[in-house]
Image (cartoon, rainbow, N blue to C red; front, side, top):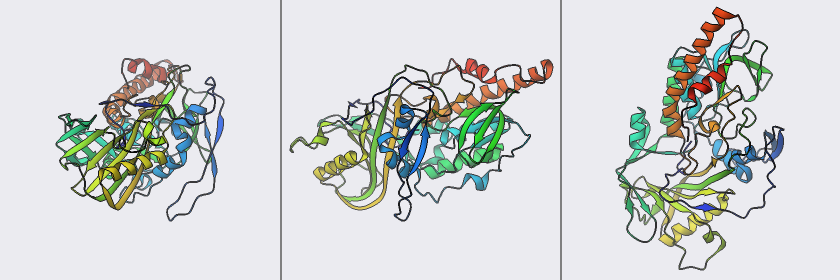
Length: 432
């Protein structure tokens, strides 16, 4: 998914931040456990420390790594304007019913794929924690119009500019929009309701295979949901449910710290979106540690006084810490003469980029960030996932229907590996 930190490649800066790391071992399917510390809850209390399972070290990095606490804080922000999935969608009925498709993950990619698949007549179940969309999304206006989602854009800038140095800004000549995460969530949920998607608010532990060839989606609380095909759309850190190619490129991370604020002395034209501002506002000051690592400012002036500022490290071998990004942002704004009067929201954006593709020999499908459908240089993914969902659903529906006919004519058992058929049909598609 691209949050406001996800950028087009107008300029590229790769950092190698000197943080102590564990030596990288060969990828194995043995599960490893890493500690997760408590998440600050609403009201200021701190939850008790818990532990979470990850498939391996890379899966841990994809989930947030050293910045996991901030990632969890971002994911658990209260968003009262967004409906609960469980309040709108009927519960998945467990028992003898075998669903055609189970989509695991309730982000934009998961909701879109579930809705598009159910619209084609499949019996679709959606499984995952009932969490809101908490990241802010920025998109090119024309791309969202092509998806029929222009009503989900809450603000549009007529042009987008980039500062690479002290020269005049470069005009991209393309309108940019800020997506309302609330409107997008409600629109995708509405599509799920209309197409007949059912839902289960729980976490998936594993996906097994039954003797019949069906998939058994095992969830917390000893709940098992049988289906003909399972598709994982639960984000980049899906190593417990999917296998990835061994020996592929290592994962880098894009991190960004943002604030939406009321300010005095806003230097930016409210009619223009500042895509990247790489100007060095620290060059006349004593060079401190944080000034050595390349970052840029991303600015959305909502009005002459209300602005979303975000300090971004485009890609780094080690995640640039959010606290360091915050320090850099505040130093930048102070040097520019911007005075913050009120803070409306903080954002911690963490986007894994690059990494291996899903192993095509496995029997489960992947979609969205779980399928590495994140641009490896920019972090963009949401528009790509939303635009691919109808095509992906169409292939799945065709394969499942063909397999159903074959099973009736040839054998009461499923005679073909459905997931492999789906992969063959979709092997010509590019996902990054």
